[in-house]
Image (tube, rainbow, N blue to C red):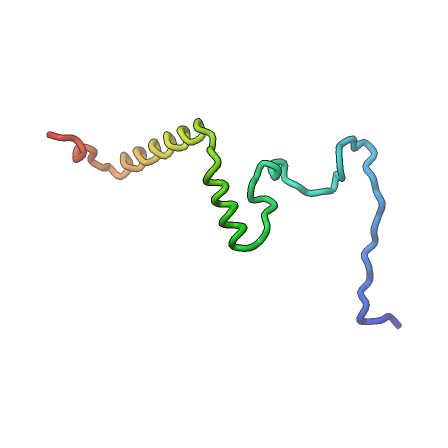
Length: 94
């Protein structure tokens, strides 16, 4: 009779892919952009989160990205104002 308290172990296989020529293990699941993210492998805790957020604020971002973002936001705001039929003449002097 089997022991009910002991769980059965899963089978393990030692398989290596035939045509894999890359570095490291082909079974390691990691996103391609994790090495560029500052929040991918952070430690837990409020202090470490605050310090990483402050470090992110200190680094300068891509200027073209900020300009493109502001243009997209402005276009979306103007489109929204056009859809709701907002009168822009209140901002102009008569």
